[in-house]
Length: 283
Image (cartoon, rainbow, N blue to C red; front, side):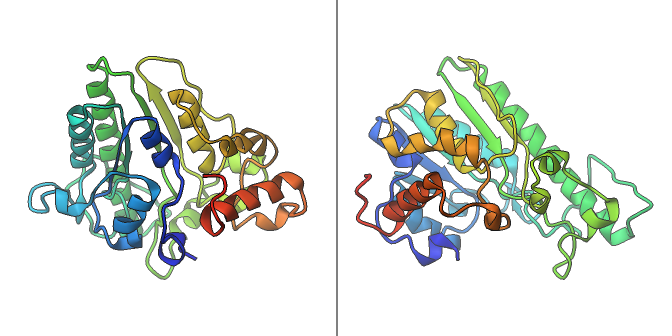
């Protein structure tokens, strides 16, 4: 089920609403169509005061390949930050390096060679690698610009899943041909999640912040952000540190390994139910 499409129809607590309650301006930026995944409605339910979709960008001048570039996204983030007269919470979701990758770019800053891949597969990997290059360069631009400001700033950078490097009929063919693996996933017995784990980076211009020591579900990033920012937040978030310690990853691919009768899991499920379907007592 896509929760955004199937369930969210009313005001729903989130870290956006938490920051809003702490006096922050709250903005979501995603250079895709706002109706996709119902974001144009859901982000308002989450407590975002503003949502900038693809209509806030120039398709004729700000694209790299078929999508709005990461460079344009970074510019929009910086403009939003600079124009806010309050502390700002900005949630930016990039589009440039999304699939499909076949024949995506006409020129490349990086090249890919492999005797294990055919020409089409090398084309896929080469275009993905170009997207990684651009993501890295634009992320570097964001950090360099933020170094110039005296505003205390925190940045968190992560992906939602590994790229689908293949055709529409075989998303993961390239991974299989190259024999790629994820040793971190193996160490935690999470081999099934090798197509879902992504890197995580965090940066601050005013305090030391730590990364995670192992693979975790992205829900734990929310607690980390709230802690690092030093804002007041609802008490139910405090279940996350213990959950990270005992069940760092909760995912549909590995849910059958979790004891559903564990009290911590039952508490977490009840919190989720209350927020999504219940009377929102925790709000």
